[in-house]
Image 1 (cartoon, helix red, strand yellow):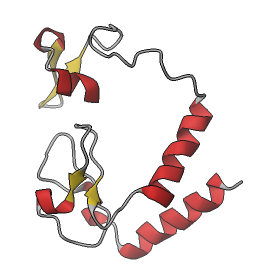
Image 2 (cartoon, rainbow, N blue to C red; image 1 turned 90 degrees about the vertical axis):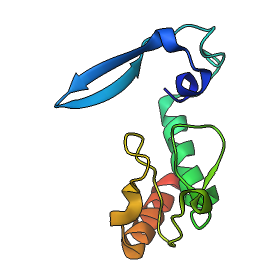
Image 3 (cartoon, one colour; image 1 turned 135 degrees about the vertical axis):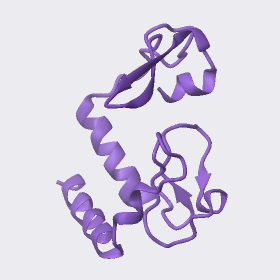
Image 4 (cartoon, rainbow, N blue to C red; image 1 turned 60 degrees about the vertical axis):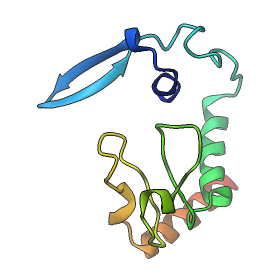
Length: 121
């Protein structure tokens, strides 16, 4: 969905209403002209999962950036005016809502520590 939001393929966008909420869905994901990265990834699901865990526990700068799935460029906390020290996760349906605001520093540290232990196994 990220690639399609950036590409602006209007003819692929479909609006779906579910529980009184409008959701945008993209139906052209499997067309190489829409997503040039189609079929380029050769890693297993397990390797992708471990890579994701490793990235967010060892590399991602939580003090400076927001986890965001709607764009490729990094999104900073300064841009969103979310200046706290906790984990910031942009809600893809309500861009002003920080999904990480409900996490305490303690729970964030517990998650990071438990994830690091599992990645090293």
